[in-house]
Every structure is written in C-alpha cells, then in structure tokens.
Image (cartoon, rainbow, N blue to C red; front, side):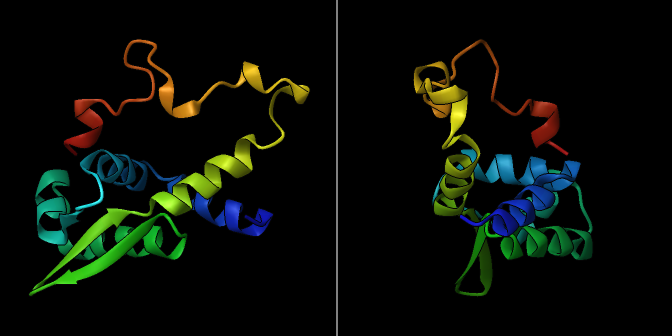
Amino acid sequence: METTDAVLALSGLAQETRLAIFRYLVQVGPEGESAGDLAERFQLPPATLSFHLSQLCQCGLLRAQRSGRRILYMADYDGMNRLMTFLTEDCCGGRPELCGPVASEKDGDAGKASAMEIDR
C-alpha cells in the first residue's frame, strides 16, 4: 500500500459515523448488510448513509454488491489488511514480538465496538 492510499483509508475512518459503520460491517462478516438495514440500525436518513457508504467504498474499506433489488455492503478485508500491514510493517524498532497479532488483542473489551457505537 502506498502512503497516499493509507492516508485516503485513514481519512475515511476519521469520522465517527463512518468508523462505527465500518467496525459494524467488520463484525457482520463477509455476507454484509443491506443499505436499508444499515440505515435502520444507525438511524440515518438514506442520503446521509449513502454519502458515508460511498466514502468508505472510495477509500477501499467497503465493497458494494447487488443482490436482487438490494445493495449489500461488506467490509473489504483485503483493504483493511493492507492498511493494517502498512501501519505495522516496520513496527517496534525491529522487535515485532512487541506488536503481537493485532487481531488477537483480548484485553477485556479492547478493540470491540460498544453497543452504543454500533446502535447509532
């Protein structure tokens, strides 16, 4: 991943609603969720949700897929993993054991979206 791509991805997440949507879709898994269900869950008007979903797709962190009359949105795990690799590839002054696997953090609720964040 190039620096400009990382900046684009991070800027997509640098907004509270988009971050909550992205974290929720990461939790949902590869099957994703429809725009209508996301609008209901986050209590967002369709136009507002559409703007946020478009931003996340453009920065490479979400994918959209048509399923009949619905559009499903899902986390782009490849994009997420490229960003995580970019952020940690030269980590810890040559001592990668200090970083540990990012996804295996199990310190209480660290790394998990709270119900309040998800239920917006």
